[in-house]
Length: 490
Image (cartoon, rainbow, N blue to C red; front, side):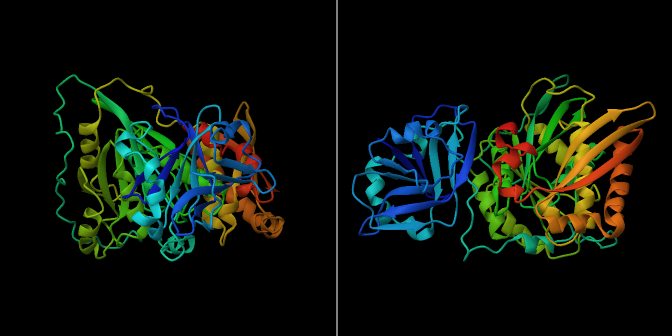
């Protein structure tokens, strides 16, 4: 027998194939889904549109159920509460989230419902199989989903976000809002006794281009996460370690939450979402110069289920705008433990920001050595610095199709020799990257080399090559090869 739970606030149903224990879910995948309805339009099950990445061994818990069937020709997996044939199959705009354990066995499925499918009459057939969320057989944090908005709802896409450019340095700041701690049922803050030490993880979340990477670099005083005016610059979680005499803060700069359009996008949203449950403090960063979008609302709704302290970080207070008018709308998104106004670009308000985080961290010991500022290796940062220059210098869609891999790294007597390959998706993109007579590739290489030299503190010989790897953003093998494998980013 299968079991369901319904989260009316998140607008999802979760189907359990086994009793879950804390920490059992190791990673997840996304696949298209459809609801199976009876003659009256009530839900009697669902369909997952699987591909050959999923094996029969991974489906063992599901196929053991009496009303689960896999069509090996189409890849359709149908799971129902009875043996009756569905009268309708309604495809959903949001992919289903499939939770897996360390062995890759599927444990449960999280399905985002459309508003019309959340009515009591539509869910009534599932009622005998429902358990309350508080009693659901899941870990303490429960399933967390960033649902993809429907086509009618969506007011956010890559093109819109590309227009959200960083304000010029000479713009005048607007009057900073009078920010006070939001009332919250969270535990009271504890004054740190002298000699005690605090340490913990702080997740920086938000939609693309709100300044998460800029904030991290400013806090650490050096670049550990690349930045650009383009959305979705950060692709993997980057940990930056801030050391104080009384605390060690491990900031996790997550990829911007967005509407995924390919498997790389699914990976980015997945690893960002996974950073939330284990964090000691979650900071939702927003652009106060603009009103909340539907994507801001969705992210805030998901954070309501986090057990950590939730801080609302109002960035870009240095931009003259109607920020004061937008403040209440952001306050209303959730019950925040604290709201803070900052400018990541100019460093305004960061001292108070760090102090508030330290007050909320648990007592503990240092998590990283005192001389370490990032979990990224020099090779990883160097490859990202090359991609950063592509983002700055190449227009249109090419930058989103770029992945950089280090082929050779050799320490010589007076310099470091580095050979990298810039992967693109189409042969036509190679010509754009190389440019007439190799001019564009030389420009990218020259700018990246100077930054890598500052990183390493020595002379660098940088040898760049361009290769077409067709459709790599939707090819699981290419994603694994290039380091975008969700199991590696826990």
